[in-house]
Every structure is written in structure tokens, then in C-alpha cells.
Length: 446
Ligand code: PHE
Image (cartoon, rainbow, N blue to C red; front, side, top):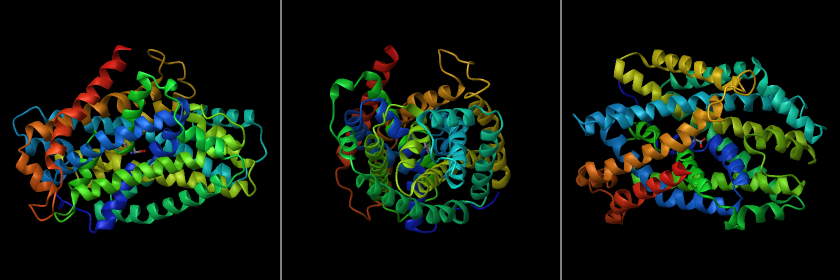
């Protein structure tokens, strides 16, 4: 068995964890869900979910991970031996695999679009052309799968190098570039004439558009965006050093992730409205509507290239964190080397990825309850497994774990001051699980 690795620096920990959180969820999914669910009112529910429920659960995962120093299944086995709690870990590893199945496909699309942007294919077309371009590409039985394979190989090459030499190093290079690209794009978008309509859509709430379903979507999305409820943060925290301030790191990750989502909205909505387009396009929003928006700007090809590179970097740093969760489990559980474990994960993901990719073409009509394979994976993970996992994780930390363990982890054995510990436990005990449960039941009944 190889020695268990770990992150080397504080900034590396922050970049890697923020890298996991910031992903397609922020830049691809958040804008289209906000667009479909009425804009500002959705944003508000999302923000409440992030700060009232998401943030405490981030800390809970950090506590479990750093205390146990193991993959999600191993962590529950260590902290709760001879109980069924490790099933929460299994659920997490499964969720990781299922998310990877569709995440890798959408990550692959970003690469195709970088090339489309660079080769000027995204210039001078009509709205209908962009739509059919996207549909022709995604329904192609081979091309998107080639990109999925390529993106998984890149992810594998990073993950097999381990925590310090792979994930930490890659995140420290990619994340600053990502932030810079975002900033440039956001400033450019706000400066467009006519951008105010988009700002208004995004920040001025219309509560009549809010349904029970959109509340579940917002909550589920908060979990998805923070990489929460499936053991990803347990896994990353298991590589944190003992002097890391967990509450502070959790706050930083939560705030940066939220800022990135809001910035993505500020990049996309003003631009969409400035060129009189509609924000309700769904998953195709950044692929079908945005190219049309970009082409009308001066210097269009620079903006579109920057945007798809941004999307690719965001996707890749999240993809490796998902890849790591399943890899760490196989590596530690079966004592298989890290490279081979990572290879097994790559193979499993490609298997799922093929079906996901084909859901846009050959298998479009293979539906169950009118959802195809891709939509099933997305629904099962973001709307079921992650909220359920988050609920069980809060219950575990607040009810099962000894409060002294929780306090010692959060305060680094009393070395740092922890404010509001009682309130924290109260939220984890009652508020978080009950809110998740209520939202869950309401939407299932519907
Ligand atoms: N948080 C990532 C995103 O926003 C997705 C993700 C979910 C990553 C769960 C890891 C675990 O895109």
C-alpha cells in the first residue's frame, strides 16, 4: 500500500476545494436553472439554501473527513464501527460515479466548443444555425464520445499523480486563470449597452414564478454546486493538514463558490438581454444562445474562446474531485494502486458516458417517465442522492458523533476560537435535516 498522500499548502487546499465546488454547476447549470425558474426569486432561494443549509453541511463533511482520514466509506466505518452508517459512504461513491457519467460528457462538449470558437465556426450564423449546430454535434454518435474519452484521460493523468503532485498542482495553475477570465468577461458584459434588463431579471425577484419544484431545484443545486452530500468534501478534507482552520476554509469555499455563480449570471444575463434573447433555453443555454450573443459583439471570437476555456477549466477541476472520490475508495478498500484504481474509474465512467452521450441522439427516445438516461442521472444525483446524503451527514455529525470530537476538529483541539458552536449544532440537528426533508416530501408528492 502506498503512503496516504495529502495537500501541502493552505493555498493549495483552498484552490483544490474551490476548484471542486466551482464547476459546470456554476457556469452551465446555475444560469439555465435560474433562467428557467424565473430569475431573481430563484437566486434568493438558492442563496438561502447555500448559507443556512449548505455552509453548515460543508463543515460537517470537513469534520468527518479530517477526523477519519479516509475515503467516504472508510470514514464512516472508522467513526461509527459496527453500524450501518457506512452506507452513506456507499451512497456517496455511487453518486460520484453517476455524476461523472454525465459530467464527463458535458465537459467534453466544452472542448468541442473551444475548437469551434477558435476555428471561427461560431461566427456569422443565425439563431437557428446555432441551435442546429448544437443538436447536430450532441446527437452525433461518435464525436462527443471522443471528447468524453479525451477529457477523462486528462482527468486520469492528474488523479493518478496523487494529491500534492496531481490535484493540488493542477488546481493551483487552473483556478487563477479561471478567476481572471471570469472577471474580464463580467466587466465586458456589464459594459454592453442594454445590459440593465439582464441585471434586473437576475436581481429583481418575481415570487409568482416560484414553485415547490423550483425550491427543490434550488436546494439540490446548492448541494451540487458546493460538491456536497456525496463525500467529495469528506475525501478532500481527509488530505487536509491538522492546522487548517476548518470553519474558515468552509466559509471561504462557500463564499467564493457563490460569488462565482453570481458572476456567471452577471456574464450571461446582461449579454442575453442586451441582444434581445430569451434566458429559458435550458441545458443548451450556454451552447445555443451564448454563441449567438458573442457573435454580435466586436472581437466576438476572443470572447467566445475565453468563455469556453473558462467553462472547460471549471469542469476539469470538478471532474478530478469526483474522480478522486471513487478512486480513493477503490484504492483504499481493495488495496489496488492509485493508478489502477483511477483507471478502473475511468473505464466505468466511459461506460456510463457513452449512454449519456447517446441520450442526445440514438437513444433520445429511450425514456422512462419521459426522462432519458442523461436526465435520469442528473435527477437521481442532484435532486435525490445529494440532498439525501446531506441530510444524513448532518444527522450523523449532530446526533451520532460525540460533540467533543466535532468541537475538537472545528477548533483544532482548542487552538482556535470557535464562535456559535451551539447554534451550529442546532442547525445541523434540526434546521438542515427538516428543511431538506420538507422540500423533498413536497416535491415527491407533486
Ligand atoms: N460542484 C461541482 C459543480 O458545481 C460539481 C460537483 C458535484 C463536484 C459533486 C463534485 C461533487 O460543477
